Amino acid sequence: MDGEDDAPKSLMEEMYANGIEGVDDAPSSSTSTTIRKNRPIISGEQLDIEAYAALYSGRTKIMRLIFLADHCDNSGMQLEALRMAYDELKKGENTQLFREVVQKIDGRLGPNYSTDATWCAMVDRKADQRKDKLESELNAYRTNLIKESIRMGYNDFGDFYYAHGALGDAFKSYVRTRDYCTTSKHIIQMCLSAILVSIEMGQFAHVTSYVSKAEQTPEALDPPTIAKLRCAAGLAHLEAKKYKLAARKFLEVGPELGNSYSEVIAPQDVATYGGLCALASFDRTELKNKVIDNINFRNFLELVPEVRELINDFYSSHYASCLEYLGNLKSNLMLDIHIHDHVETLYDQIRSKALIQYTHPFVSVDMRMMADAFKTSVAGLEKELESLITDNQIQARIDSHNKILYARHADQRNATFQRVLQTGNEFDWDVRAMLLRANLLKHEYNLRASRKI
Picture 1: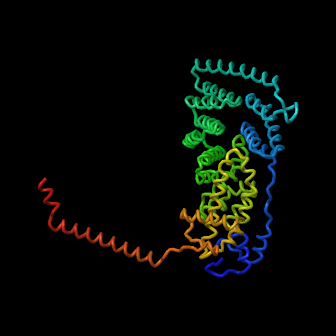
Picture 2 (picture 1 turned 180 degrees about the horizontal axis):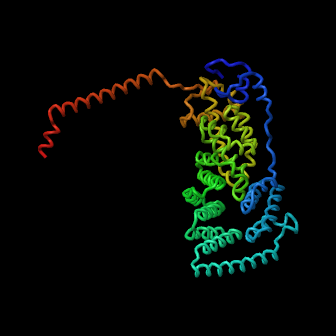
Picture 3 (picture 1 turned 90 degrees about the horizontal axis):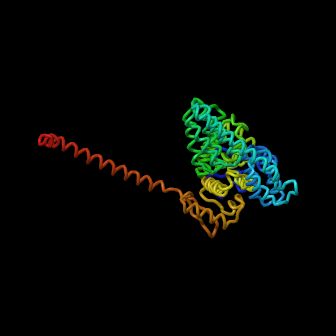
């Protein structure tokens, strides 16, 4: 690899092993280089299901456990997830989902985790009684035309349907409370309830809509509520594959969120989703200003050290270390209910940005050295570079015989001549237009035309 300037031998070795060091981040001594080389890489660890489930509450906890069981190849982890989902469902009232989990267990956990017909019948009976009571109360409220009571009646119906897994009916009940909201706080409560159910149903268009409605009543928004709305908006943008918008929303989440939105998202998820979306979509300056120097987001990153380190490695151009962190995280990310569909796309975009950033400062790059830095074969790297050159993301050409990438710098001499010619043409056009206007005034053409009219 040949740079425009010579570099110390120790630094060049570092470049070959880990990618290039940023111009403004170059280590000042060989000591810092040694420390960087010896920093251990966190190895991929099997997901701790109990600790993972403890981050969440309510229906999302159960759905994440079921999703994990459906997508995990480890039978032990599958059964552990299903066991925890079974225990969690027995605390609630959703008998339909309970039966589905029992069917997935299929007797593999013994007689204690089989269909509890007595419990199901009892819960269903109580549910029917509760529904009849809610209907009679709501009818009485309607007769008396008390808006607050009607609102609470529909809200109770929404809670009832949500607890029993009837998400469509729950959404309709929550939305009906809107006509009976008398304060801004009531509107915020309605929006948050509609957002919660919409996320569970996967209807992210509704999420975006109700986030906007909630933001239209800023006087009733406290910091925790603002943080929740930004999380919901971030999830909606993530689902729509608008990664830059998703990153911005997650980066705006304040520390007030804490564990208050555990029925939807954990603080660790904010760090992971926000960090990966930012890496895939932000340029170098944005990454520095909005992520690394963001004090609020730094608190979230501290909860997920791997994401924090891979962001720092990417910015510092230590690509081997960055890609190794990404590789270690991938298996667990594929078990995440929200980001699993986006992992491959995000990883491809991050890798492409790393390749572009690696080649940018150099006149020529030895592709063998570059392949070592990116943990890939020379043939595989050549295909990746070909794709980036074809998409006009890298201005370069490849010497396939010698395996060297040559930068194609713009011809400054030719560009200067083109600018001079363009300026001359513009000046010529301006002069002609000026002479035309002068002749029109000289011969009083405008005056004659107006007199004829």
